[in-house]
Image (cartoon, rainbow, N blue to C red; front, top):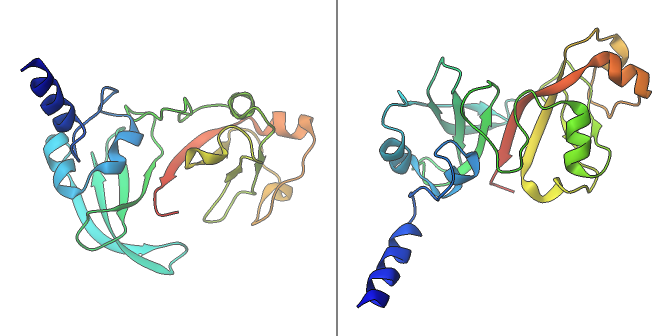
Length: 188
């Protein structure tokens, strides 16, 4: 009898749309959820839905926003109109959302290098993928996490544009970069 109860409990916990043992605000927990699951698990999220253009205006997708206009705002784009498969998740506020990787909004450039176990590269600023990080086959390469750096320091024209930035350590230190946005892409 105990075996049957344990088996049924295990089946129920693996069911789509249920939260695992980690935090409700761990973004990796959302991967299995559809729009209905989000409504059930985040009833206080003031959910907004719509359709918009993404990928530099080349791809139309439905979207959902949880906690709009708050520090916990989270954007979800969907792979299909039925909102059953997440394309990606995005957030840029230092609210409750966290990643299992330990990367967070405000994580410094130096901390990212340490977490990655290999020096990262980053793209220039001032375009759609401003400050995008390249993991350079480090520990975070297969995490699915896309991170975008934001400079807190003075930014010269040298650091703008769709290109990997070549800079001295002194220049990087002067940029004083931190993670300004996090994306997990599930459609890869």
